[in-house]
Image (cartoon, rainbow, N blue to C red; front, side, top):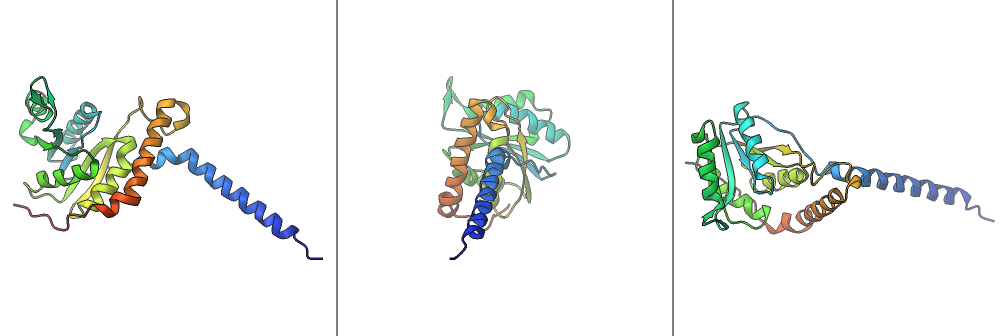
Length: 210
């Protein structure tokens, strides 16, 4: 009679290893979303987000600390608030609050997705000779942002300064309902980027600088 116990035992061991690895992934899946590899760069770009105020003040601190020569703030030109667009309000706010307003400017955007926003940022970056860019992004959106900007605008060297969003996100994602929701939604966006948008959007192969 053929003995099957060794094979059965091996299958059990492999199953236990697989379950263990799955458990490690699930526990750390929120940590995977976060990147902070900030480097001194030519320009600091604040991407469009709900936490744009926090991002603005962080960018000014980074500017003062020598992480960039200029700050570029993505602000919507197609959404009106009390008779003016977000871009117009942002421009006025910069003049009132920035220590060096000549080094902080608005990049008007109309994009509905991050991938589309990349192309509009490319248009604003073309105005000056730039080789490296530091993105200021919400922590849960940082990994995907770095991948998207790096792939679609390969002419620049990209790094990330992530903004903690403790009200909406934490790496111990299971502790709060809102953290669970944010992690799940961002993973949906991450998978959509990897499986669909990565191949749907064309990288800007060459950037013409003045």
